[in-house]
Image (cartoon, rainbow, N blue to C red; front, side, top):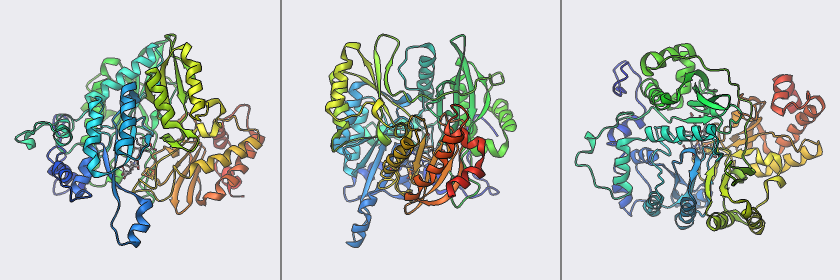
Length: 574
Ligand code: SRM
Ligand code: SF4
């Protein structure tokens, strides 16, 4: 297949294209009739085609699922609303940008900011008339939402720790370069026309999208940068991963990984989570060409008829890694083929608490339960973060574990920052249970249309019970990662955690055990459809065995892997 032009065309012999492909073709480089439907005050929701296209603009049309029952009893239709996701490479914001996002969520959203598992922000509960002012507010601060969702490259991840050494700096700089290179070009023009009152092209269908082509990618594409001793971005869950390699403390290039992803579908056994595989070693001048080559390969070889299998991970898996490498180096990436360097992943840092930046200043990692920045009861997290960021003019970075880093605190200001945390009821990370710090949940109900169970609203209860059990067993200090999702799509990367709880329906979850807190291994299903109230009592039996039988300072997931799935299953179901 040619690598010069996008070639998504359907031939008579090929399977039927998914309807989203038609939306893209007819959408004239992401315009559709979005401008018209947003200008029409009589409409409370979008047509199917515009519902597909608005994702590329960084938004999903959603429904308030909490309101569903009462509205349907009253004969009212769905309570439509929108979610908006920023594109925030490396999770970086200035103090002013953070404060503007805080203002916007209060003015046009549901008064919360949601840190995502890909180090970005989401606004929830945005009503249709508020979309344009909110997006204009975002863009006024020089941030964007273009490509936050949709069949393009998504937010590029990098370790957000603002540490001034060569390795941290290199991976963040490269993350920003890759993100810029993969921004849709014609899509940017369309975005300006729809939201920012930009001048309209007379013939938009003649515009060009040099990298993606008119039908963009078969589906989403995800990239992460990481370091061997700090895999805080969960690099192996990404379509494309860059693991920085150093010699004598000096960065020399990256090991490239391809084909990671989490999502699976219950009714489709040919869908499953996969870890990214090592592909080769590249030098720094090859970083952007490698990303462009991988995107083109996916553009040409990804599945455009079955969206459930339209991910790069299936191209790698179905083809086999060796053939995939041949294709990548033979047809797409015209640079020397080098073997990956030996560089095992050995750690994952949550970046919480006080940490030096290397320039005499400090950053403070604040743990945000399930990423939701809000004021509730005595915990006035949103107001407190706002006060600290504005008073000390602190830049902000978001982590892929849904936490926030307040950057550039002078030594003299540390006591005042701590006093503000206390004033707003924000706990110091040292006082938080370990299991809470290592936990994540996706939003699920009430905003996510695909959720079949609760997640963000249920995990805190499970975590409180786990804390009690682990404390009783003397295991409270163990870094055990627990991740919950409201369906098998895997948005909180549950299949890579030590304990994964995946919504099955009602208040039941499929329980997975035995992953790795550093993101190196997939876990395995231990029991399907476990009622939520049975999860912790059952886990406590596995914890007790771990306590009795662990080898030295062996981690919980490693213990489970060593003793084997059968034993873990029998402990769990005893
Ligand atoms: Fe996700 C779809 C939320 C990270 C795999 N994801 C969705 C949607 C948009 C639901 C929908 O299609 O209608 C969710 C919106 C819920 C809401 O109300 O906000 C949603 N995904 C999220 C976020 C907000 C979860 C979070 O707790 O932070 C994350 C946003 C990241 C970002 O800033 O870009 C999020 N989603 C992920 C990840 C984790 C990652 O990328 O590191 C995954 C697993 C990795 C992967 O891609 O395989 C993930 N999301 C999915 C999938 C399954 C894709 C697949 O290959 O089958 C879907 C379903 C889909 O795309 O149709 C999905
Ligand atoms: Fe929605 Fe499922 Fe993703 Fe949770 S895992 S946000 S329920 S798609």
